[in-house]
Length: 177
Image (cartoon, rainbow, N blue to C red; front, side, top):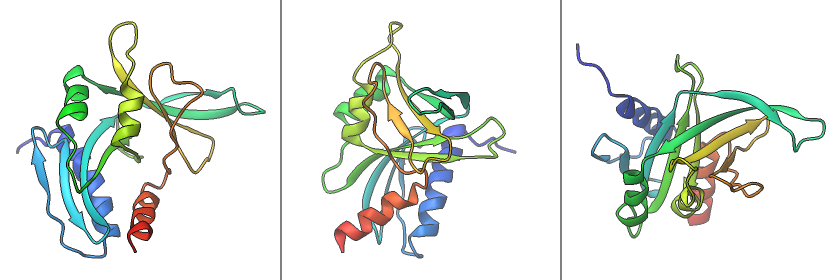
């Protein structure tokens, strides 16, 4: 029995949710490398999506909330090669260029997907930690309907994609109608 690579699994999680929302419109997928980049066309438009994942949720507090609230967050790491690829070779003209971060736990029993456009992603990845790492922190405070996505030293700036990532595609659909 062949093992499914984690990158393949998480690309499949993302694509399955898109298939369900695209109302049976044919979908063409093109994968490169370890299936981190997925290109597809649906009734919602033409997409070029880089899929990343984290299986290590952390618990903490959002001290900006009054009173403070519990938050869950994932640090999604990007290698220097991935950053260079996103910056210089990923973008495709005529397509919506996105990064989907699948955030789950080790048992894969609870998954969330945060979607950023390429410009937001590159802004989050612009700075590195003292150790030279690039990460995007995806966090959710309480039962908020959006995530807070930020990079190294970006506080208080963050991007706020929907917790229900399919709302992103509903907006895309209404923008093109």
